[in-house]
Length: 449
Image (cartoon, rainbow, N blue to C red; front, side, top):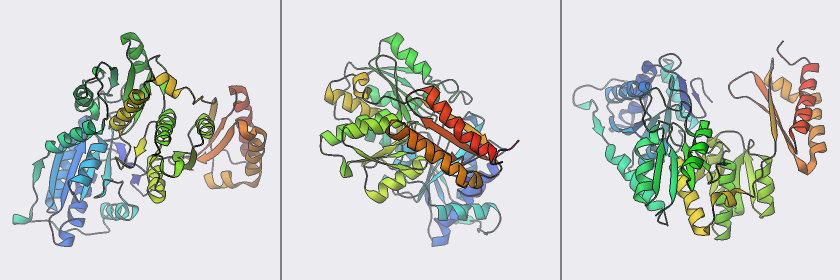
């Protein structure tokens, strides 16, 4: 992670942590870096979510790009995965998505994608940051070299067509609930499901610039749970603000998490001989119940640091086909370079229809273990986590849990905090072991008083 960009872009409160000036600067650098630096005209595509500030950042980026001689293609309100897809298939030099994902409307973010639709490499990100800090000079375009904007809503339509083509089955007479979070999916998701024949029931599809993610979407799944039961629906899907994640609700109103989704689809792939390497890529935060369920069906797994970026890197390096996070970022490398909430929901529909089973039955083998997680504010994260006595306490808990649970101690990526998490048979056991480790951290003087 750099000075401004984290694992998922440059984020901050609009015009405080992330300002319109930053957007102009990012546009200026990218227009030069992919264009005039190489004696050519750069071609860059931009999408945005429904936040009020997204319009400001969109035009600021365009101004910066054009001032450096690039052409800016505007997809308007669309999803992060649609920008990734169009960047790749329409041969753009890079893509930009304006969104703070599941964050409240006050925040916003700028995500950069390379020409393959993947998250931008660290080397280029560091160069962007150097320009923002005034360490690199970029010339200004003049005369006929000044860039232009191009309305590119056609790109969004192309992406919708791609999603529709993904389905192997008609959704005729299937009653589907969609919570589009007053976000980027509001113009796309219903159209896709309608085109495939579903009886589609939509909620939170009236964005006003301020209500994105507000008591809705994948971060407030309880509303979709109630909606599915009240409407007697067959299944429900909830997306976040930029629709790169998806959670499900089964016909009984139970939540189907990203862990359940990875189990359901990896087993479906294995049964058809499509699970290359027989592996699923998870993060360390996936529930112990997922691993127990995968063990029972003979599917192997790998664990990465938290962040879909790390999941994708592992998948590409090792040729794995499915991976993701419990939060609903699911990556199917055969079809996409990033998590795609709508694609994920189509894949869940495919399994349900192919197996002719309700979602509750498909998800049942994954039984979540109770989890207790506590945060400890410390003076130094590395010193606390690498303390020999703390390590010994963690190892002791791991031995006592054996095959019936697990302990995870990790550093927060954004705060001076150590997170201690235990999963076991019940909350009492979890709490006891978490407290045992925290007592050692406190006794060694690592805690901020």
